[in-house]
Image (tube, rainbow over all chains, first blue to last red; front, side, top):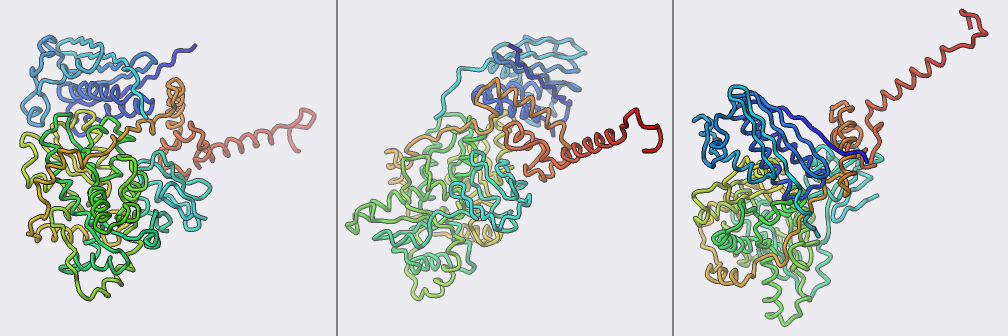
Length: 148
Length: 448
């Protein structure tokens, strides 16, 4: 049987706080239409939102690539930006390199990457300082809840 | 001809098949089919927005009327607090209540009293709450339905305290039956409602086996009779028991205002008042994404300005809001509700939903079979990108994406789009021309 795979690409603009969150809203809408379990949708929504916000807060621009196959969902967010100096440090809760302005807006609490990790099954981060970062997330649908 | 969709009726003789309703519906629940508006009931949240936006007044809702009073030995009416705002003048509230008795009800008991009880119950609930935030107000049944359909994750975060009118009705039925030595079923309790959402919350309650209210009557249906009855009120009996605290629930922010006054909201969190379905969808969407955080309580209302903006009210919603606010601000009377008693009964579980709300997350999904859903989505997106993107509504769907949806669901054809249809006609015309120009070789190059 032919493998059913769906793919989407969405562009994310750095420093565009007005439109921040729109890409993850679209991702969420697609999952709801495909009939995924609400808890799964919530996990994906949070992970994709955090990844999107990382691009908005830190990078120049980026692309969110969404792939859905029957077994799993994969989101790869690739950006052109400053990159991450020390990924291990960035994974720690509360660690952030966000500027004071961004913090004033309520972002940059250092919870982004830890929050992603909590909500995905597999997380891979590759980064080159001065070039950009690739955040690769794999999320598997949990067992289907029954609804009356 | 009239066509019914649950409690909603569309008068197809009046419906002109224009696009006003399909464009106004925030859940994209209406289509024009064969020149008439049709409702997709699984998407409809029964908010009544289309009632207001229909220029022909073809969309209405009705379950009960004054003619139903004769079926009971004793009748009580519970008027929604938005009723006070339908009439001008100082001290009008009590007169309206008296006029309801002139219309034939044996007794009147205000929804606003229930609101005062519900507020105390909510305060207690918030105090002991340890679950995920935000807690979402249960006051607006249209919002509850919106959450069940579009934000199933939040269903368990809906404040599980009953509607004020149900709290009142439950109590009244017991007390009145005892007082009058009647059977509980001999008492008819009617709820005077400002919107179809509250009507359906009574007719098809989802938070208990059966509503404590026998029927809902629309404010707009009896408005004329009520005006006439007000002139007949000679001596006023003191019927108004509710204070500004409860009456304030008729406008947006009324619920949170009392929570703030009682200082029961957490100082380290925020709270939100949001009205209008589009705005509510935006806020819930941002919360679901994790963009809006640290919110303790949301008072969300489907109608702009709150219940005074309900589709079954009469007076302009902004005027009505002003009148309610006056009642809220000027009313210095102390609530007759005994807090200790309410707290005690809250702890006994008296005010809670009798059964939990269920999510209905699959209203927006394309197909129950995931593989088919994926196929449909691929096709839908292809069709969508081939459409002109004008969102004109001429096809009968509110926008191009909705038409693409309808095509993959077998509810419409791509040529319902007049631009696609024109393309086909053009292609066909070109093909006809091509054939018209072909000649058999036997004929000379020029001439016939």
